[in-house]
Image 1: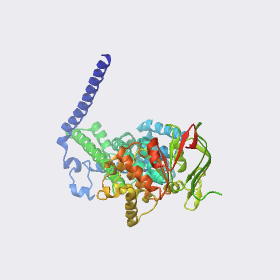
Image 2: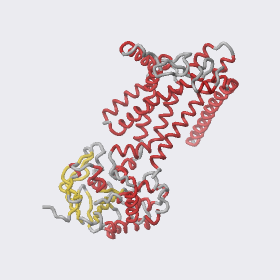
Image 3: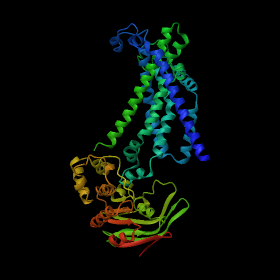
Image 4: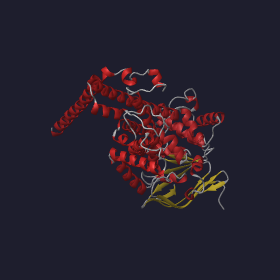
Length: 294
Length: 234
């Protein structure tokens, strides 16, 4: 009787929390759509500039969010491009090569890194910029590259841990199959273990991409500005959607401007969704190409 | 002087997982082109014994062996315990068939070509010929020749195990280690595997771990039992 009652309470609680979560997300998205949808359109993105000319880089956009969109995409691409190889290789090392002592030590270090507040990592990036400016070249300062490096450091633990866990959770049988057929350790990792762990690795990658796209604290200190145009080089300052949303919501002077901020939120969500689908599609395609093409 | 017809010689071999001793001072000889069945109660170390011949214990922390194992591959004697041969090379010539069929989540063709790819064989015509030969040896070619691009996971249990045997045969091993190869199969499928193992005697030396005494009687030339960390002929 008691077990039955406890099960019913747990089931009821589960339904309530799922409903609350679902409703919260729906209300949040609905509110964003309601507030931001009226502002969506070419004017929000390109302002007074011709869209084609703006995309081709022939005219600069001053009153639209196109430079911020371009900056965000460049930033996410660069930081993911820096974090992915390092993170996946570190995860492989921890899962397949590290001894127990090294695994424990590196595990603690990565856990500490995961717990560092993003503003502290932003400060690290700013300090790096100052150091390079003083000792390397006066041309170097807070810029796209410094922001990307800082964001890569921020998201590294997600990729490392997801890679490590995905590999360690593979069944023992699948580990031995290729080895028994004469595979070297590296061949086993490349041809069997990684393809089978891709779905777990991709979840870490998707998390990392999302974090790179939305984090504001890091980029505040490492190169983002309100007006910079499309990023012209790795060492240039840049605009980004999270920063645009931040300063427009702090300094809007009309309802129309605030609506533009909500519109920018919607566009940021769409960009994240597209990047997630790209990451998911790439890992599925990689898995197919590696495993199913004879 | 070693008799030329011996394929595997085991002298004074003991094996430990950490502080847990599994095998104690094992002595045995396995003749070429014979099937030796290894029986005994569960948990006595039969799979561990098989794993000694192709060093499958290499990745297990704390695993260590002592003594001498000599395997004649071609005209050369190698010592797996001393690792005087690169392990990938050893495992291509001393193949292991697992208890549970373990095809990789790939097409049948890709499963069969996989060991050749690992060994650096890229010529498609050579790969195709070796794949067909191995599948024929495993009594599987006629059943799968028109569906080589389909997933190996869609095969029946018996077909999967024959695919795993064929996949091991594609590298033309000299020793075939079979760890309870029919225990997960029904009687009909098991019978096909038994016939296959007997046929393979002409090209390999086989060591077969089995719990089924009737199977052992049907298939084996020699029978050994592993009990209380010791191996003895019966």
